Length: 400
Image (cartoon, rainbow, N blue to C red):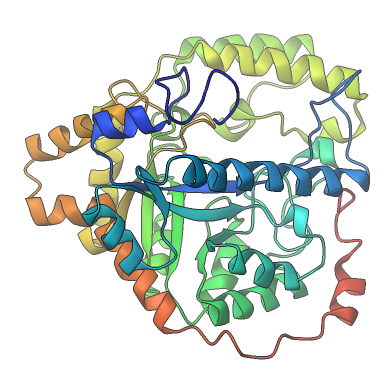
């Protein structure tokens, strides 16, 4: 999004632009400032990260932030940034698309807690600690052996990660627990005085992978007063077909790997032996694995709403929301871009959801949480001195 051929005011090939939001009558959405080690960039990729990858990840953040703010600058009559829930409502009343700025992945922040203040001043209102791979703040639900990760390397949150929970509470920033390890999520629930949000997750009961949330994790989010936003990511909504699993097992045999032990290993190159693989071998395996997954039949709107139904039954309508993960793998048949959001609403109506409940799912619950988090803010609270914490955590993982 934001590149040539995918301009904000053009109906381009991507899943999000202002033309599609108008066609779908979508009022607003979270757009993410994201950074990650670009292991696939450059000659002879993939590469294992080096210290310079942090600078590259920070550059990615800046590029994405400038795309978001540039859209507001270029199309002020169509779009604006919502810094508060009242802004969100005001922009809706003005007929403008409301952007909520979130950030995903602590990796680019290194061990500098003050960057949370920096990004909050620039408009960040939700922060997710984790993506693929552990970082120096939190363990991921998807540790990546290619990055020398091991499961639960930090035991959940590191010292700086724990301090970040308090600072985010003080700043009035929503804590996003999607993609965290189970231990990290549990620790956030113990440390945070504000409701948590899982911004883009699905029930583990439907697809048994660590990236999805267990019933117990969803209950922790509910008890915090938070929201689980069900994501329209096909592989998280229905298990892989046997045909796809057979293809993956044939691939694994070619690379001297045992048969699939679980679905998590089917969706990413996660075997521990990959830690010692040459970069080229990893690249060949990962490319073939993802090519096979691309052929898997997509989940549908019905599958998506099945996941919403399940979560509503488990934790109640007041704690469930809707998310897409568009332009990063999200999209199901019937809800494959922002122009198709009304297909989800139609399916909810077909299943008997009342208008008030549909409003809760399409942002009402999220706005409630945002207001609670904002009301609990203490932005003038003194930051913790992190000099000792940083020295303790800087060597926690090989790629941070």
